[in-house]
Image: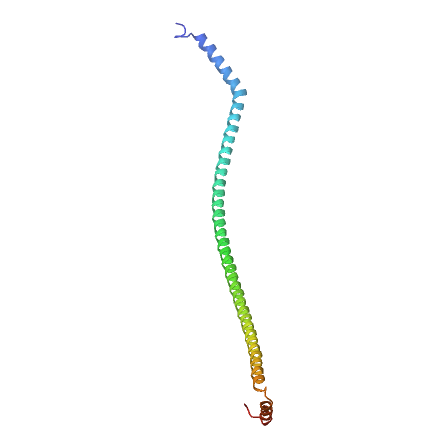
Length: 163
């Protein structure tokens, strides 16, 4: 029962031991512990501030990335529009050149056809003239086989009278 109702001596020595331990802890342990706690608290605050700064920077980067993405899409649209204009222009130029080339070929063909037609007409005229001369020669040979007809024909030519 001594523990339930301690004596004066026990209380004195317990109080003396507690005070000694308290002063020793206060003198040597508490400053280090408090310093460690302050440093830890400062590290936690710094880490929280750094995390907040990183979070804000991530937000800024996200906004920047969205702006860059939007700008890239706009640039892509502009480039595609320009490429379409260039393609259309090249197609139009190619179409115009093809039409000009076709027109030139048609004109060349017309010219060639006309020159061949003229050559054919000239050839036909030459053949007709040759045939006419041959026919006239045959007719004259037939008519002029007699010497009297020959003399009469010469007289008519000299007088400029046709047959």
